[in-house]
Structure formats: structure tokens, C-alpha cells
Length: 304
Ligand SMILES: [Zn+2]
Image (cartoon, rainbow, N blue to C red; front, side, top):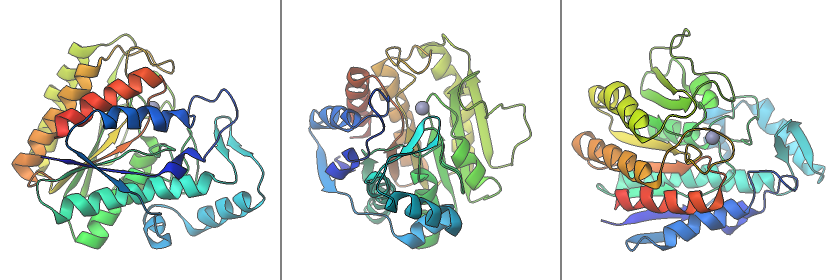
């Protein structure tokens, strides 16, 4: 079994200010992990189309970002989300890679695809950039799967340490998509409380700071994986964030490389049971370079 890896060098051209954790070196680190996977096939990502962006984002938001980018200067969209002259090119390639990952796995049964890209996407809302994210790649890819391939049941599993607030906001009430997220709480962005009112296609589950392998696996085994199983998805998408790793500086979970192998294996099993093996992942967070390299390797190994 081989893993199709979609990436592009220009994803490194998005350059937040010096010292920002979401830095170009993350792309190199993730690709160093990929290089160690024997059965991978690297493919050049292409930019997302305007029509695909419009599946998840409002036209005014997109036009506003275009206008700001055209100024050619570095602009802070919020305290930690920055737009520079090449940021939209990088974000377009990231979202395009996620859509092409869907195309590859839908077309060739039993093929897994992984968009190894930056910036991440799961905090971006329909009309708001936030949390290092400009375009919500995974929401765009899921809606593209419905729109272009006519799928009726797509599950998005988000194991990034932060809640995928943007993905939830964009997809709430879209019952052809089930969105499931595990995340540390309390933590940025402060959303994703399972007790708070939410749409019927949303499943949130939280872990307190300090939680490790046992708590993470128990949460997915007892709360989230059975929901994926019940939903019988025709395609499994993954917001693959590795910032729950014990080395990561932005959060306080204690996950190890093996936990990313484990979740990859669990999700690949469910994809085999329900979706003809169709599974596509997109890189979200992960801010310690060594942890990112090793976690991407472990997760990728589980998919081949
Ligand atoms: Zn994150």
C-alpha cells in the first residue's frame, strides 16, 4: 500500500514574523518525516480554485484578503495570524493539496493521501482568519468531496490539540459531513465544549492538560471512533495536527509518536470497513520540529 503525499515548496513562502511558531521550517520537518516512509509517492500540489474556496468562504472575505495581500506588506489579521505577500499562494496550495488528496483517494480505491502543507486551516471561519489559518483546507476538501464527487457521508476527524472551531462553524448543520474533534480544554480558542449547544453533526470531546496516551486513546475508543463507525462514512478526512505531542510548546498534552501511529491505524481500519479504504489527511499544527518530524513519520507509517 502506498501513501500519496501532496506538497509544494511554495508552502514555505508564507512567512509570519520572526519567532512565530508557525514557521517555514515546519514544512521541511514534516517532509523529513515523510522521506523516511518507504512506500510514499510525492506529488506536486496545485492551487485551489476560486470555486472551491467559495464552498467554505464568503466572497467578501476572499476579496478582502486579496486586496490586503496586493499591498505587498506584512499585515497582522489578528494577534497571531499574519498575511504577507506570498501567504495566499501558500494557503491556496495548502487547500488545493487537501482537495487533490480527496480526488486521489476517491478515484483510486484503497489509496491514502496526505497533504503535507502549511499554513494550517482548521481555525479559519467562513469570513474570518484566525489561529495562524487563512483558508480552511479541510472544510473546503470535505465540501469538494460532496460537490465534485457526489459523496453523501464524509467524516472529518480532527486530533489537533486545539478545537477546529472554523471547521465546526463552517460545517455545522451540513448533515452529509460528521465533524469530530478531540482537543485540550481549557486552551485556545476556547470553543468545542461538548456540553455547549452544537449542531447535530458535531462531536466534541475534551482532555485536561497533562493527559497522555491512555486518556487520548480511551477518549477516541469510547466516544469518537464509535460515532465514526455508526456514521458509515464513504470517505474519512483527517485534520492531522501533532501539537498534542509532549514536546510541543503550545499545549500541555503528553502524547507520543506511537499515539499518532495508533490513531492513524484506527482511522485507516474504519476507512477499510466503510469507505473502501478512502482516507485523506491534511497537516494542521505541530510546533516542535523534532516532534513534528517523528509524529508525521509514525502517522504516515500507519497509513501505508
Ligand atoms: Zn493546533
